[in-house]
Every structure is written in structure tokens, then in C-alpha cells.
Image: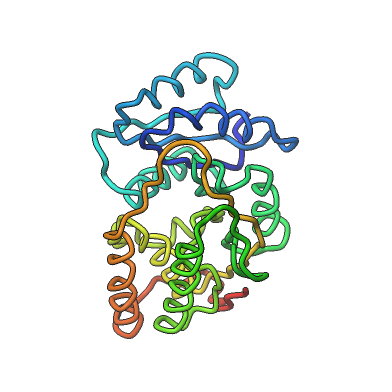
Length: 256
């Protein structure tokens, strides 16, 4: 039976985490989550682990798209969004492979969209303070004030604008012009939220605790933050002059 929800997990060298995260998602009491792994040519064999699981216990629930080389987080998610739309999923999630996003929070993000009527829900580190575990203080401050900077420049009321733990209703991804999403790294998350808000979709922040990875290597870099800093100015410019497609019911409420 076709599930209504698809969790997209981009990977690059995640052999330490990928099997465990797949088992955790598939082991949720609500077993209506399918998983799509987008692997960017991991030389450590991440894709092979996924293929073995696909051939075993998770047949018909686990899927894999393999790409050649590191093409960027944003393009991985765009590829996943298109795959999800082509395969008829109603709720599409972004989630990291490294357990920084707790699989047990997936049902809460789903409930915000499916049961409460929001178009997009965000697993938010900052809606109830600063809920980050095992990050150095410098990185916590950088992330927190990056979101404040985005709020200031764009006018978004979202507290965690750079969050990568997200649920979209199908309509959101059908309405946004995915070809027009330009950013590949950290700024991709900001652009998706800004664009959804400009299109009039209702957004809810769901409080979560973000836990820094224990296994594998972080993919963050200075260039990612640089893209975000300058990208936000471009988004504000677009907000003034670009015409965005609108949600069918014209509701322009964004709730935090």
C-alpha cells in the first residue's frame, strides 16, 4: 500500500549512521513513513548499505537515488521533492542522516500538517529558547544569530530559519517553482521557508531538541555560511520585485 509520507535523507559518507537511522524511522509506531536516500556518490559505501537494506527487511519502504559526486544539499532535496511528487506522496520530509534530528519527532511534524492544517512544519531549535545539545558555544551562537539576521532582513517571523528538519504538504512543493530555487547549501533552507511564506503557506514551528552528531563528519563549512549571509540579501530583493505563485486559498498567514 502506498504510504502518505516520505522522509528524504541526503547522504555523503554516512556509513556509520545510515542503517541505524533507517531502522529508527521504519521502527516508529506509526509505520506509514517511507524513506528516500539521496546519495551523492559516497566513497565510503553508504549506498551499498542502503541497497542491502532495500533487498531485505525494508523492501517497498526504502528507496535510493544515486548521484555522481557532491552536488549540494539543495539540489539533493530538489531531486527528492520531484521524486516524491512523481510517486504520489502527500507529506514530504527533510531530515539529516546523523540523528541530529530525532526520528521520534517525525509524527509531531506530520501532525502539525495532517491534523492541524498547516502547510509546512519546522522542527525548531529556537521556538522555546535554545535547544541544542553538544554543539560548541561558538556554533550555537552563530546558528542562533544567523536566524535572527534572517528575520531582520527578510521579515520572516520564523525563529529557526536555517532548520533542516521540515515537513511539507504536497501542495507547497507543487506550488513553489523548484527550478527557481537557487541556493545549494545552508541558504537553501532559508530560501525554502522564505519562498513558502511569500506564496502564502501556513507554517508552524514545532519545538525539538537538536543533538550534534556522534558518528561521522560534519559537512558544514565557512562557504556555506557565506552563501547564507549574502543569499538573504538577494531573497529580500526578490521579495520586493519578484512575483510569487500563491496558495490556492490565498491565506497569507505564517505562524510561529
